Length: 104
Image (cartoon, rainbow, N blue to C red; front, side, top):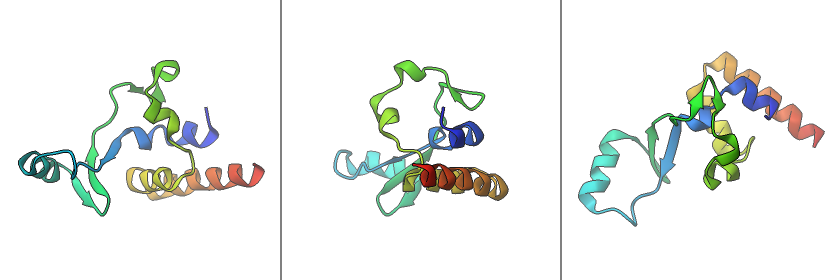
């Protein structure tokens, strides 16, 4: 497990951003918009993954491809940390990410 992930405990697994504008009817899209937060590139839903147990993925070896593609340290990762973690914890996690990137 990535060191930042061990401290973060799954901020990225507690929310999802969906761009449904092209695939949903206006009424269904409205329902999602009423249940989520609007962002420029879609609707953010606060919905923790049911397989996140004590901050760890319980299906790591069999997780969906979209989870495998999620990059630690990406802008999406950093945004999840900033919005889902207390400020002091977010700063700690982002320092770990930055330190890991410097080592790479």
